[in-house]
Structure formats: C-alpha cells, structure tokens
Length: 311
Image (tube, one colour):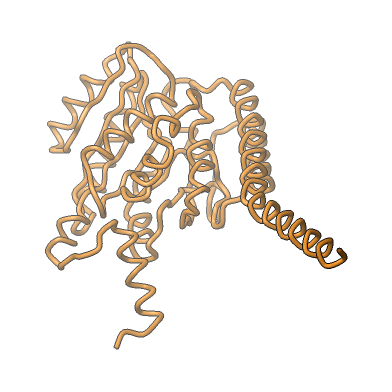
C-alpha cells in the first residue's frame, strides 16, 4: 500500500511533468531539453563569448540536451549572422526567430518563450538570459538540479541571496533595483522569491503552458523591461513553486551601453505594483462575495421565518 505522503508526492510528480501515465522511457524522453531563450538587440560583440560559455555548459549537462533560441528584436548589426556562424562552429543547436523591426523586450520575450512552448513538451525547461554576457550561464546546471529535485516551477538567479554580488553597476541603479525588490515583496509577495526583475530564470514547460492557457493573449502585455516582473506577478494566480540561487552579476564586463531607460522602467515598475496590488484586492473581494450574498440570503430567510412566527 502506498503511504499518504508517498501518494501525495507522486501526485505532485505527475502534476509537475504534466502527465498521468508514464514509464521510465517516456520520462527520459520528456526530460531532455533545456532551451536557452536569448532576447537580443544589437549584441553582435557579446555573442561569441556567451556562446563559448554555453558550449561548455552543454557538455557538462548530464542527460540534458541544450538548444539556444535566439529571439532577435530587429538588430541592425550582425547579431543574427554572428550567432549562426558561431553556433555552427561550436556545434551548438540554434533556432532563430526574428522581428523585422525593434519592438521592445516584452514582445521579444513573448516571441522567444512562445517558440519554446510550441517546440517543447512536459519535462523540458526554458532558461531566459540577457544576451550581453553579464550573467553566468555556469549556474544553469545547478538551477536545473534544484528545479528537478524539488519539483519547482521557476528558479531565479538572484542578486539578493547570500553569496550574490553585483559588479560594475552604478549605485543609483543598484538602489533602484533594491527598492523595486522591497516594493514587490511588501505588496505582491511570492513565496521563495526576492529578485523580481532579474531576467535570468528557469521555467518548467508545464508551468508556462498552464500560464498560457490561463491568460491566453493577455500573458505578455508589457513591452519594456517591466515585462520580467509582470510575468512573475501574473504567475501568482497559479501559486508557483519558486526558489532562487545566488548570482554574481558582472555588469563590468558588459560590451556596449545599456538599453534600459531607467526612469521609464521605474515608472513602469510602480504602475505594475499598483495594478497587481489592486488586482489581488479585487480577487479577494470577488472570492468573498458569494459567502456575503449567502449570508444575506440566510439572514433574510431567518427574518421571514421570525415574522411568520410572530403572525
């Protein structure tokens, strides 16, 4: 007889992989792919160093096949050509999707993750990263292990865990990031999460598919850098299992200037917090509405009975 705890764990396992009947061969086939989703705009100089590091990661993964989904946002330099040539030289599996013109990070992230959902299946993972080679792809292996061993939906490479560090970012930018983290944790908390704005994340295919089914075309609505936080906040409706690993962000090694409009991103962040806080309050109010109506009906019925008795 299967114990209650073992049975609950098995049900959690089935939910995690999105399957109900499975044998060992099917599990091995469903658990192989890790897609590195790289939104890119004019990152020609960073492609070579980043792909070289991903090549090493691919060889270190056990029973995992790594592919790169380059989501190009209408680059005007040779980003796409460089990616194609370097991937062929290193033997990396590369799939390129493109915008004809620059449309912003939100639309580009949507294009990359939608491509992953369409090309992959239960047991697979997407890892979103910046394409500027400032985030360490060497963390991907440990993020995968953490997700698989604990049946997590999302793993975030965090700047706010013990051992994390940020090098080369201005004091103003660091203060803004820390302030945003504090706002999100106070008003829109997610258990296990401190870093809401870092784009270096691991998502399970099954969880992204559930999000896509829930929100449909409303899943990706933010066009700017706030799209990263927006995706996490929208995930709250499905109560994701989330954890973090410490990351050392090497902004001092960034090639080229930042594409982030800081003040615009701050405004978008404040708007996000307000909108999702209001949404959560409305959801709670809606959830309590049926019980409120029921109580009113019961009260009315009791009054009616009392009046009848008095007559």
